[in-house]
Image (cartoon, rainbow over the protein chains, first blue to last red):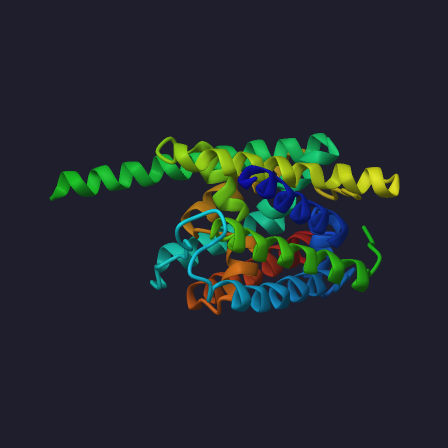
Length: 145
Length: 143
């Protein structure tokens, strides 16, 4: 039941991404191209998603626990540091270069287009690279102390 | 490449994304973040969490196929950039979302809905960075 529900939730997300235009790099890049071929559609995607989630979370989070779990896993960190800002800036540059973000690209794999597979492979390599950098930084910090 | 303004479709798609985010919190008590999904698949220490992420990913990938079955048309994927740019962009996105701990879904939808200051800073940062990158590419370099 838990896994079936999880699959269906992923499906709802995938359908939402598909009809919203977030899986279409041309549409994504045109949203940011205010000085050129501007297409404001993506503001409606973000607006719709945030408003529904805002209301949804207020209905769900007062519960004692999720349906299939013991507790709600909410990010506890409130630190705004160079890591958060630098990482987000890098993500923005990559998004601007390619037109794909992770949430748009993963469902887009279902279209079978080779461009999506190329992007996701490169993104996975980036994920791996960042993990290597992080563990290297952590071990050299541990070596100093 | 010109694209058609689709306010209703985009709003409906956005509402479905919000519904999925709400249901994942209701069902599993988790933030819906594509970065987290991908991260969980590759990390070795989260073996207990790998299964639901795989299943969630399978559902996400089935999305375009369901749209195809219902409408007879695959969702449009128009790629106005070269394969080299896709590769470079993908690599930068992978590094960025790992250090930034999230992307458009985790920070942009779930974090903003929680009014998390961290997420609001992250979203402002990447929106400005993306817009600046697109501006430089299209109007300064002229790719």
